[in-house]
Every structure is written in structure tokens, then in C-alpha cells.
Image (cartoon, rainbow, N blue to C red; front, side, top):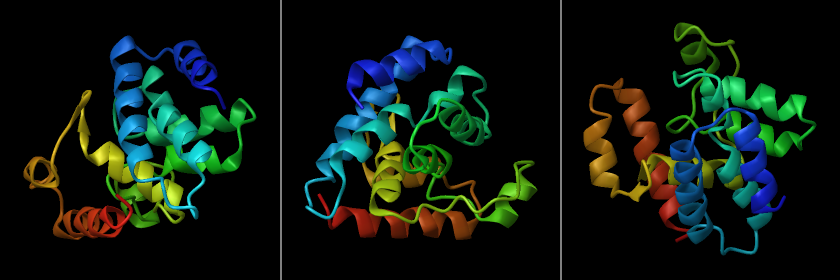
Length: 161
């Protein structure tokens, strides 16, 4: 999907200019991880641009769940909806989702494209790329299991940069 089309969808979903700028920054970083021929660059670009489409409705944790629903309602490819739904941190298990008041659904990134977008989002604060060390400092309050998952995702994804 063309960038202009993605930006139009973000605007129609109610996303602010700040959210759109963040999505562009995540896209730019994600593409740095998408040079391997095994990676679908177009899917990474579209998924990264739309990963926060749910922020047009809510800025809380359920923005990923809402974003996946928006993507499906627009008839977008399920692979894009999955990226949007699974980009939180390094994913959420069904149990974690349930404990957070979300639909008890496994939202762990599985494909390379899902992992790349989740990792890139972890390394972009606003529109600024940050280091893994900075990200780890910001997540110190998360449960140990989630912190370890974010660190392991970073280790795996850094092999693609």
C-alpha cells in the first residue's frame, strides 16, 4: 500500500499529526531491518505506517486491539491487522491480554514482519530513535518476563540490521 494511502487511513481514523509522525519514524527504522530477502518490505512498510491506527480512538494499551479491528473493518490484509495487533512491546500472551482487560487473545509477534515492526516501535520514542539501553530503562516497571521478552526480541532483530 502506498504511503499516501496509509496516511489517509490514519487521518480518517482520527490520528493526530504527532501519531502520524511517529508512525513514519517507526516505518523508517523498520525498513532498516527489512533488507533480508526473506522479509516482505512492503508489508513491513504498511504495517509500520498503520501500527498505531488505533490511537485515533484511544491512547491506552487497547489501541493495538482497536487498531486490528479497524484494519479488518477496512478490508486490509490480515497480515497487516496482525502486525497492528501484535506490536505492543514484544507481544502479549492471551493470559497477559486478559489480565490487562483486553480480549484474551495471543498477540505475540510470530512473523519476521510482525517482529520487525514491534522492535522498531520499541526503539522509537515520539519521532526519535533511541537505543535499546534507553528502552530498557523505560520498561523497568514491567514484569520481568515482559522485559526479558523485549530484550530477546531485540537480540533476534538486531541480526537483521
